[in-house]
Image (cartoon, rainbow, N blue to C red):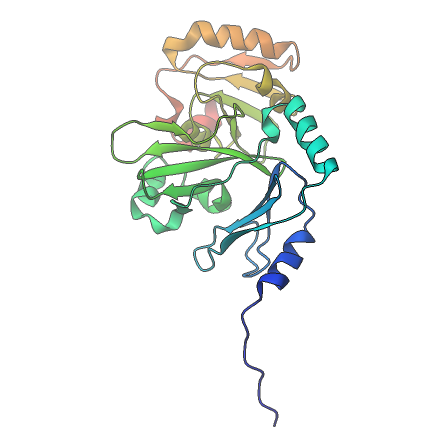
Length: 266
């Protein structure tokens, strides 16, 4: 009977070879299945000005690193083109102190308190935990490209922190053709129990937001009651692109409502 071959750790050259096969373009950050642990959609890979950076967010893997790669004339042209196209193409690299969210009992308790733990379980890659700032982190991702993150404090001080300089909205998708526009990420996750949650991260609809809204058949604007005038303005702007757009005047923020309320009112 032949002896089993001992397991050998992958070399840097074999890791780099696998990463280069993913063909990440200059100035872009994307998620893939990890080339080492095999976990689904946990590996963030970024190519930026002659460097290839990678980070796996799986608690059992958490491999990370960077290596120099060729930065050609074509890559420079691509970088310039990406800047001209807009900020959503700016890659975002998570700081080292952002880790897998299941490492924080407080973050898990927070999600259960607001009733969107099931949304997290269905979309774990949209959530992380900031060890340094004690924040639940919501990942901003569109078409497989990670463009930023927003953190919500779990200890009562400065509530919200934007980690990137982009203005892309946070969208928590659901099996629905309806989107509900809200102010913050928590409300968007509560909404996602029934419909797509679209967080403006404030009360202003930016020009960059419109392209993300065009893919929905029906849209509700559901900001806080004190932002009714803003809601009317937003509704007018969206209706040009998506005619089936309405306003819902709320008695309280949607983050404090449950699934049945969302289901019966939208």
